[in-house]
Each structure stands twice: as structure tokens, then as C-alpha cells.
Length: 189
Image 1 (cartoon, rainbow, N blue to C red):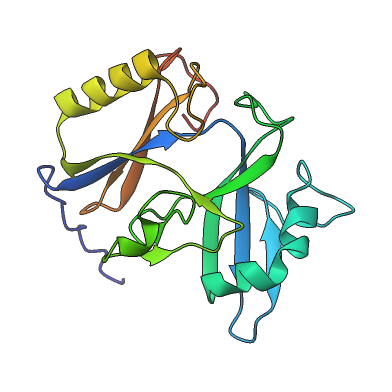
Image 2 (image 1 turned 135 degrees about the vertical axis):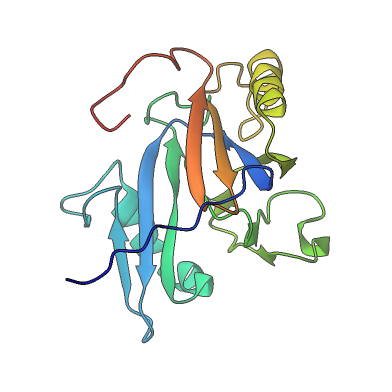
């Protein structure tokens, strides 16, 4: 019988990154080593003929710009006009999740950030709200500030969904919503 080792346990008191949880629909961009581009939702590939709120059509229309992301999986939220909360926008946006790699080119001073790459102009990046040692008090405070002052992704929108907490040592994501966080949404929650 092959031995099944016990996994290493991550330390809780390590860095976490808290970002705004945007209420839209998941988007996936996959770029292969030869520059091929595939477009997906959270759980399937999409095409302009079998699309997800126009994401495939948008991605193929921005193909050259998206190729600047480089080979690999690039995941984010497709949100805005006509999708979920809409955020008072007249357009749709794709916001990348990997905030430790990308900085939003639409943010003032983006080109001055030294530890991250500037995302292609057709993309946004989910806003970092806090980066520091994991602390449940900071998580609750961050959620409260978001509820009181509104969305950072769409300023002046006063009904944001919540936050996502990424624990860097464990490489695990958690979400916390402003309304109904204690309720089970589905069998995977």
C-alpha cells in the first residue's frame, strides 16, 4: 500500500489579503504557450454562441490586449451593466482576482507600484482593502467599513456584496458577505 502522508499544517498568524467581493459572474481566461486563448466561466468553456453575459464576445474582441496576461490561467469577475448588482455601471468590466501579481492600470499611480505588474488596460483588478497578518477583528472591521462607505470597485455604489480573504500561507480563499453570511447558499458553502 502507498503511504498517505499527513499534510503540513499552515500557521494561522500569517499574511492575508482582503479584497472586495464583487457580485457578478466568474470569468476565466486561459492562454497556452503558443498564444491560444480559451474563455470560460466558473465551470465551463464559453463561446460567443454559448456565452456568459457576453464575456466570450468581450474576451475575443480584446484578444490582443488579453494576451499580455501571458500563458496560464487568469481568473476574475465579469460584472457591471446587466449582471447581478450592476453597480450603477453602463458597461461591463473584467476584474482580475490575482492581486498579488496585478495592479489596476485605471488606479492613480499604478505604474509606480514596484512589486506587481500593471494589468492590461482592458482589465481591472479587484480592490485590495487590507493586506496584513490574519486577524478576525480586522476582517470584521473591513466588512463594516465596506458596508458603511460602499464599494471600492465602483465608488458611490452603497450596496457592495462583501469581502474575500486570501490566506497566503495556506493558499486558501474565504468569503464573507455583508448580508446573509450565516445562511447556506448551496451544498458547497
